[in-house]
Image 1 (cartoon, rainbow over the protein chains, first blue to last red):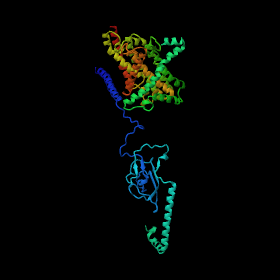
Image 2: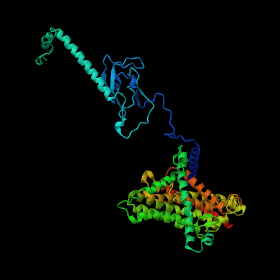
Image 3: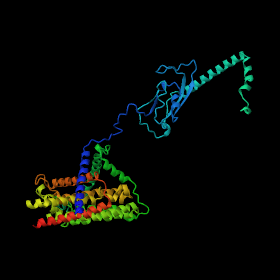
Amino acid sequence: MSSVRTYFRDIWMALYTVAVGMRVTFKHLFTPAVTVQYPDVKLKLPERARNRLYVNIDDCIGCDQCALACPVDCITIETIKSTPDQDLGVTSTGQKKRLHVPVFDIDIAKCCYCGLCVYPCPTECIVMTDVYEFSEFERHNLIYHYSRMTPAEIAEAKEKLKKAEEEAAAKKAAAAAAKPAAPANPPAQAPSEQKPPSAT
Amino acid sequence: MEELLRSILGDTTLVYVIAAALPLLFILPYALVTVWLEMKVSAHMQDRVAYMYTGPHGIAQPIADILKLLQKEDTVPGMADKLLYTLSPFFVFMGTYAAFAAIPFSSAYIGSNIDLGVFYIVAISSLVVIGILMAGWASNNKWSLFGAIRSVAQIVSYEIPTALALLVAVMITQSLNLQEVSRFQEGGIQNWVVFGGPLPLLKKLLLIPFTLTAFVILFIAGIAEVNRTPFDLPEAESELVQGYNTEYSGMKFAIFYLAEYANMFLVSAVAATLFLGGWNSPFGDFLSGPIWGFIWFVTKGMFFIFLQIWIRWTLPRLRVDQLMYMSWKVLTPFLFACIFAVGLILVL
């Protein structure tokens, strides 16, 4: 007898649960969709979202702190010292710029969006923006070159620095020649500075 | 319809060709609409929006799909039986399309006004089974074969509840000719077989629980016959890749797809004709006539299509033993009870 009851109860339960399920799906038929039509509609990002890096090269003083902070070494900076006769101007924070920055490359393919480069920057010239659509077909396009110095300018700056260094060296040599007694000291000091290998 | 064509074109074979091609003119746009509807309904039931770019709300997407399938490479597996592999999609579609011959689309059009309409539909739609088995076996792929075997087992066992449910309606209408069955239910919603047909009031009231049961069972068995969720074991994606049509690509796959959608409409049409008055208007003489008849018929058919889609995106798939349990231990005994009761009521 109980198996007969189970049989009919099962049938009833099947019909009832199907009806429940169908009511749920029917309700959802009229629920507004959660889809965002992405390329046409974009959700607003959180205020402190970390996406593509941007460098305001006009403010960069070439201090290399961001490159040092970077855990994946995606920032490459090269600098050329400026000579006293050059005025590179000041940053927007009022700091005097002393270095040319001929190379400021960020390999954004390597970047892990940690934001650690942003905090050490003394002039706040490296920032994370809200741009996240920058896919490329070629990987080398993902290396961003921020420096605006042309090869001619770089060569000029290098030339100037060389000249200045040569001038300084010449001055030094002249000064050294003026004081002939000076080079007498080093040969006397040298043996005491260099300990013999047998002593250790 | 045939008389009309014959009066225009004379007594030529062209008349038969046109009369035979008319359902195809319905099936092709219907399949496009239903593919779109299925995607849209399923998406909205899951709080998504489905395709939105091809035309307003993606209305042209099915056309784009067809164009894509037309351009696709038609691959045949190296170890497949080439002849059977190529034939089977057409076999499946043929079985489905042949059944449309006995479907009365309106009071003015029925492909073939044969007296054994219902019997013919049940018989000819079994041809689909052979096509599916051919496809699965000829593919020489174990998943395809599993799918085909399951499909055959399923369709063969669900043909019995289908035929018995049809018998309940036929006992009331006293005809196997679907045009006669439709004409029997003329005169408004209260004369439909699901509400007891145009019989004396007492008999009607006694019949309603049994016709309603038979109608629900016919619909359930219909879903099982077209291999749709929750009875989609033959193409269970999570188990069998895609079932019997795993190896098919391009237009052959498209024809399988078309056959599946045509089959969906076929079971809907049979249920609508036998239980919901076919091309009859629910308001008696109001909004009736050959053109309105066609619109009512398609409306009823599409209602069932929507119901099938709705069920598909609600229920999970049944297990094989549950499937067989349902057919042999639930639907069939219930229908025997229905047939007995209806027969008794009609004799009294």
